[in-house]
Amino acid sequence: MYPYVKNNKTVSIIVDGELYTINDMYISYNTIMDFITNNDVSKDNDKILLKYLSPIEAFKNIVLGNTSFSFEGNELVCKVDKEVIKLPEDLYRDIYKIYEEEGSLLPLLKFVKKLLKNPRKEVVEELWSFIKVCGFSLTSSGNFLAYKRVTDDFKDIFTKTMDNSPGTVVKMLRNQVEYNPNITCASGLHFAAWEYLDHYAKGGRTVLVSVSPKNVVSIPSDYNNMKGRACKYKIIKEVHTPKELDTKKFYTDLD
Image (cartoon, rainbow, N blue to C red; front, top):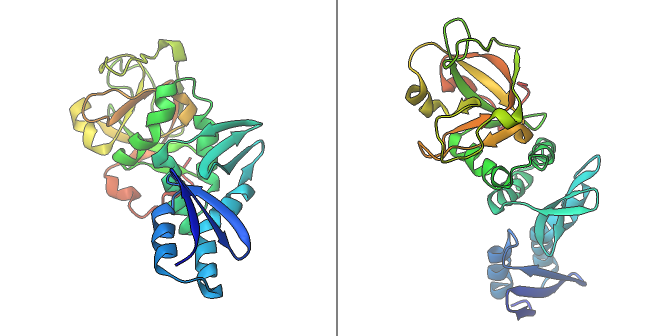
C-alpha cells in the first residue's frame, strides 16, 4: 500500500519524490484511492499513478488567447484573464474524458470561452447538459449544431417572414427573446433536438443551425428540455434525417 494522508475530503501522497494533493472532486479520485490502497510503492506503479495525476500539468498548456483550462484546488476551471470560473461538473468530466481519449480540446475551450460571454447564469450552468441530452455536436469554432423546422420555402413556421435558407445568418434583438424558461411558447429564434421537431411543426423542411453559446437566451422547460431560444444563429444546410450526422465526430467543421 502507498502511504498517504487523508484529511476530510483531501488526500496527500508522494509519487516519485513529488507531493500531490487531490480532493474527492478530482476526476480520478476513486481510481487513485483504489490503486494506492491495493498496490505497493514501485517505479512501475509510480508511472501509473503519474498518468492519473498528469492532467494537473497537461491542462496548463491548453491556452486560447487570454483563456485557458487549469486546475484550482484539483478541480478543472477556466481562466479568463485573471478571473477563475468553475466549470459545471458534467462539462468538467467530459473535458477530462476527451483529454484521456487524446481528442482535441481546442473546440471545447472555444465553446467555454463563448459560453462565459453569455449574460444568463442559468444558461451557463445548464447548456452543456442540454447539448448532451439532445445529442448535439460542437463545431471546430466552439458553436453547437441543432435542428430547426421551417416551411417549404425556408421561412420560419410562426411568422413565415424570416428567411432561413442555407447560408443565412438569422438574428434578432436579444431583449426581444423570452428568457423565462417556464414560458414555453414565446418569441425567439428556436432550435431543437430532432425528437422535438414534430411537436413544434409537422411537414416542411428541416435545417441544421449553428448556434454560439453566447447567443442562447433560454432553454424552455417543456418536452424534457429539448428545445432552446437564441438571438442569433446561422443556417448550415437542409437535412432529412439525423443519421446524416452519425458519421461526424463530436467536433465537426460544419459552421
